[in-house]
Amino acid sequence: MMEQDIQEILFSQEALARRVKELAGEIRRDYAGKAPLVVGVLRGCFVFMADLVRELDFPLTLDFMAASSYHGTESSGKVNIQLDLHDDIAGRDVLLVEDILDTGNTLSKLVAELKSRNPASLKLCVLLDKPERRVRPLEADYVGFTIPDAFVVGYGLDYEQQYRNLPYVGILKPSVYQR
Ligand code: XMP
Ligand code: MG
Image (cartoon, rainbow, N blue to C red; front, side, top):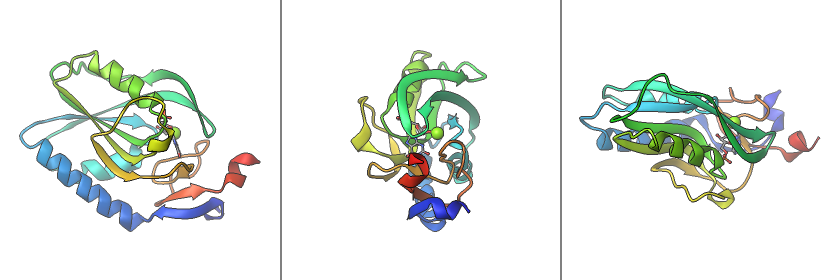
């Protein structure tokens, strides 16, 4: 069972739902009268983004990107865009949604790439922020929770593609990735 691999539940399903509603409230205020493009970073964004956009009551469109940098629990620093947007974003208000801001390698690359396409605005929304691990100077505009340096899974986040379907966010037992 997946639960046996979890050391500690950090955010329950209920806590996540409450915080996502609060974040959505901030985003609703900031984007009132706009029709942003919400861009999710696959695959980790998928649960968070699905919950978030259903709390937004203004017109929006969705798209997705994918980038690779992780091998197991280590960020490699070398980021490749594996899936790109369908449409031009020049003049659009873009909100980039990601599961976690960790070293910042992935998001700083994606942010630089998107900025070069001249959007009207670009903001970053992450469920989790691990500031201790940052190697690039990057902060998110909307942060669900700030967490210590531990490897977490669930609510979209994976370890080797497993655990994404856990309804909560928990710390993975180190024995799982040390074996
Ligand atoms: P960087 O280091 O580039 O990493 O900011 C961002 C991506 O790495 C993944 N990541 C994690 N995935 N638990 C996970 O399941 C974690 O604790 C974790 N830390 C980083 C994640 O996919 C994110 O997009
Ligand atoms: Mg991942």
